[in-house]
Image (cartoon, rainbow, N blue to C red; front, side, top):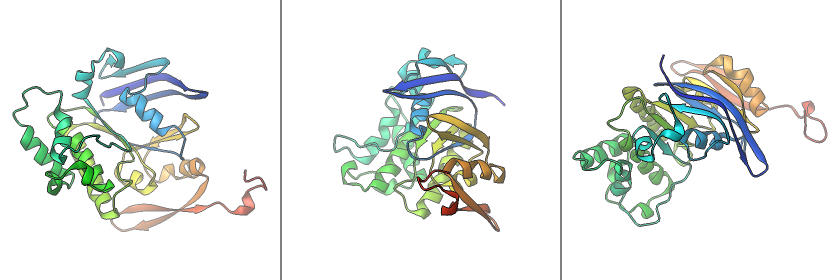
Amino acid sequence: MEKLCKLENLSLRLGVKEFGPFSLEITKGEGIAILGPSGAGKTTLLKLLSHDLKAHLGVYQFKGKKIQDWSLSELSRSRAVLPQSGDVSFGLLAKLVIGLGRISIAGDSHLVEIIEQAARLSCCEHLLDRGFNTLSGGEKARVHLARIFAQLWGEREGLILVDEPLASLDPGLQIELLHSIRQYALNRNHAIIAILHDINQAMQNFDRLILVREGKIIGDMPSGVQAVPSLEGLYNVHLHMVNIDGFGPLVIPKARSHAMLSSDGSQ
């Protein structure tokens, strides 16, 4: 399968903290979930992939070309980013926020149609004429997701990077939007990399898991039951597996016994 991205020994220092070296290959059309405890370096890895942060050492190739050789305009046609939060300073209508995803395309004759279709896909078509600053956190998240859809709507074999895309949504909408994100990416052969905290969402909806702790990748494996021991070590929990027809195995986290911990809280 064709490679979309290749990271070789990518390293970064932020203050006194070091991240990496990260070595990673990403295939076109692949769905990857990044998992790890809070503060592990997940968002930093995502920002390196988006080129919002520039590595101090190492090589990053995107579509066969060094990432620093891409112009911002070129990159915006092949790579879209959904950060944890994305407030808009001005009281723009939601449809204009979605349209910002197409800003690099001059004379976009299909802009209105694409905005409407992207909004429908992210379940926010009823919000198009609302002021963005009047929306709830969950509604804003849906509008920003539609912006990402609009940005890469006519493109193929791109890269979608999302940081906790479901955090402010109710469970039903989480399921619906996860399906929309994956279907959108599959239809266009986009790779999608998402930071998630829900292990079951990661295992049920993504092909591959990247485990991050203390600024390093400590695991890279196919999604499935074979990943459970590594996930237990990553989060220092027991994961009890339950088989439910139609859902595949689900995991239920359970804290490790206090008897396994020393008096200072370490193992």
